[in-house]
Length: 153
Image 1 (tube, rainbow, N blue to C red):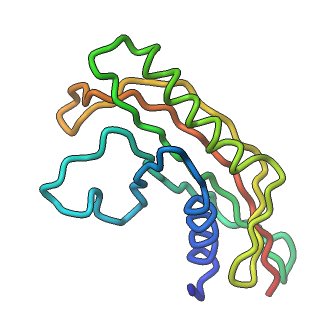
Image 2: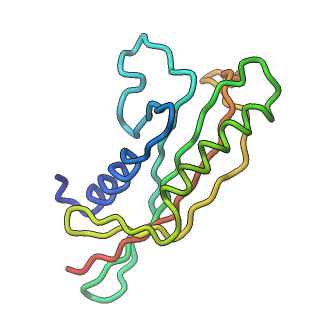
């Protein structure tokens, strides 16, 4: 278990995401973890990609600090040569399940801290691109979960 507050927050959010049940299950690309597992493996057809964004911690009182940020889970589904709205529908169905898993008011207790989801929404879909800027054959829909955590020293 992590000792640092930032690491505990990340642990809490990632453990919450790991508890998401989808059918069929999707692989998850976590921040800082090689994906897919082998460097020569192709990415799966559909998967989730996770990013974390942090705001500067705010000192509320001399003993209390407020941490805030966003967890973004991108749903990536294949377009399979179809028009984007087909991929958008499939991705938004999955994105709705992610949003429900991180719905407003969700409390995530872990390692002596509690992270609370303040807001969660599904963003607009877009065509995914590879490192060269070419369409990668996937339609992506982001889900943003805004969170906060108050820590008392």
